[in-house]
Image: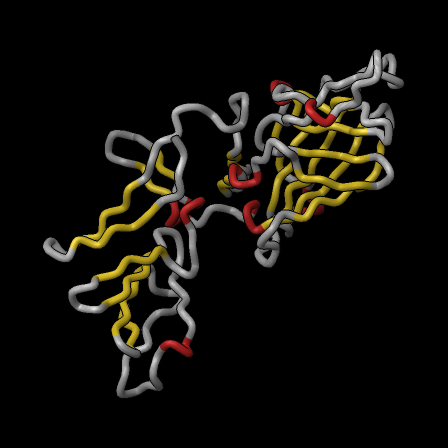
Length: 260
């Protein structure tokens, strides 16, 4: 079962309890590694980019790219006799022709990760490559793909760009997204027993919300970053507290006040 995290306020204990449902089966179709630690120690977690429909770009030919898992597009493949339909859960990227033939650009099992080239390391991000794609019209080579995942704090939704077709049926793409930015240290924790926890995906600047109906307080918690509430909901200081800003991880408000 999958669900979004939700927040419960316990008025009797004055405690916040965060409950999370555990995913038993992978939504990606196959196991996928969606994290990478760079040579300078930055941790990247791009699991939120996973989509079985793929990130899509149309440049005459259609391309579908899933940087974190497999694709599921065969239901839309041509039904013509002899049609090639390779966009399945084992493929991380596909090319689709105007006739709806589907050619793999690389398998999930071949995925490799690398740092950006030295002359690009002022930009945060990483490189993903996949090989062992379709051999059709590429013999003796197989189609393959290289993906530049770049951090863009302003890109709330991922933006994919087709760069070019390189030699030997190798295709180049760039994906820019906030999800590719390094995981802040405060969003990870290693337990005394050595278990590593990464809760980057729980980041929510507007905070998770819970209501204390008895005292008429609203609570907002961001377990990975600050809580940013609109100043319009708070009266003008200095007589009233307006503390809910990017430096505060939890806030509560009552009437027109905001308190960390």
